[in-house]
Structures are given as C-alpha cells and as structure tokens.
Image 1 (cartoon, rainbow, N blue to C red):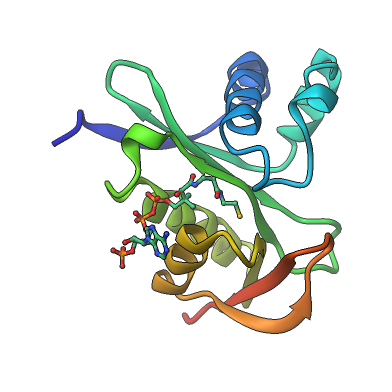
Image 2: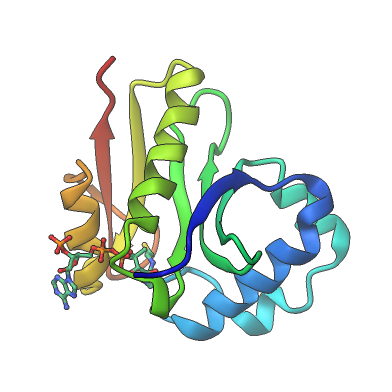
Length: 158
Ligand SMILES: CC(C)(COP(=O)(O)OP(=O)(O)OC[C@H]1O[C@@H](n2cnc3c(N)ncnc32)[C@H](O)[C@@H]1OP(=O)(O)O)[C@@H](O)C(=O)NCCC(=O)NCCS
C-alpha cells in the first residue's frame, strides 16, 4: 500500500510546481497530450500563472511528492468545462488517485452549476479510455480536436 495522499487546488504561487509536473508528464507520456515538452519548457512565469487561472488539482503524498494532476479547463463562460492535462505518476496508478482527481473536478463543475463535463482522449489510449468509462464518461460521437482523438462526456446528476 502506498503513502497517504490528498488532493488540493494549486494557487498562482505554485506555478513552479505546476511547471515541473507538467513538464514531467509531457516527457513521461508524449503521445497523450496535444503539446510537447520542447514547446512548454520555453514558457515564462506569466504563462504558468495564467494557466493556473483554470483550476489545477494536484494529488500529493504526505511527504509532499506530486502523484497526479488534472485541470478543469473552460474555454469560455458559454462552454461546458473539460478535464484536461490528466496524469498520474506511473508508480501511483491504480491507487484511486485518478478517481479522486476526477471527482474533485466534477465537484467544482457542480458548484458552478454545470450539467456536463467533457474531455478528449486519444482513442488508442486504452488505459485512459477504460478509466474514464469506469468513472462515468462515454464517447459522445464528437470528434476530438486533433487526429486520433475523440470526445467523451459525463452528465452530472444532482
Ligand atoms: C489515464 C490515467 C490518469 C488513469 O489513472 P490510473 O490510476 O492508471 O487508472 P486506474 O488504474 O484506476 O484505471 C485504469 C483502468 O484501465 C485498465 N487497464 C489498464 N491497462 C489497460 C489496457 N492496456 N487496456 C485496457 N484497460 C487497461 C485497468 O485495469 C483499470 O481498470 P479497472 O479499474 O476496471 O481495473 C493514468 O493511467 C495516466 O496518467 N496515464 C498516462 C497519462 C494519460 O494517458 N493521461 C490521459 C490523457 S487523456
């Protein structure tokens, strides 16, 4: 059994931690996200702080090690929110961390009065698809924003 961990929302002053985890996930899983380490390693502090304007949830061990992250991104006020940039460190997968990150995102969406949460996933990312289906997401027939990617939705009940 792993160490105890908890989920919290990052603040703007956590931008350095956000940067470190984001760059780690882009190196760990370069095909899972619509971006690259080479692109984002060049971002400045202002860009990382701006990104934290969208809620970024992190799971940390009691010793302060980052174990996973997810962002609840809303393109604008008229759009449903999307879970993006979801990642759990390899050694921590299968321990319920991904479930807790998704539920934290869903709780934030509910607080805003949203009725649906969306996400995009590469259709050959079988572990991610199996995970999202287990926590209530289903392919909704919409194409994703990049080749090989499809959209999934979860309708929120009260
Ligand atoms: C996607 C991710 C966040 C899920 O977190 P996780 O802790 O691995 O998820 P879980 O282990 O709880 O669930 C994965 C499920 O897929 C199953 N699975 C594992 N490998 C699989 C495979 N190759 N094919 C199909 N299912 C698979 C597991 O058995 C599990 O199902 P179960 O809960 O019914 O047993 C994590 O794997 C991750 O960070 N992956 C790399 C980054 C990534 O792909 N992010 C998503 C971008 S959209």
